[in-house]
Length: 59
Image 1: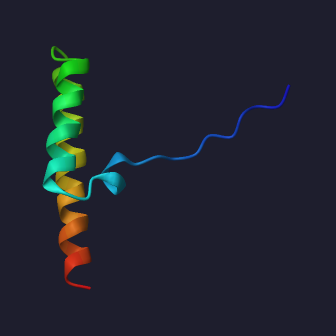
Image 2: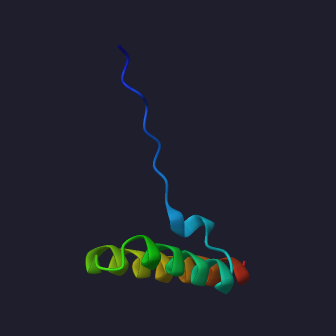
């Protein structure tokens, strides 16, 4: 059986607005409220998304 090909997926690429980021954080906190490492990763994704959107605005 052939192994499925995995594709890299970066949630930060899809967080375009402040509302997207807030909803993403809210959904993740509802999903695993007691997983501090996961929430830290989510906040990192949001920080990267903010950086990406900041760069895109000035292009």
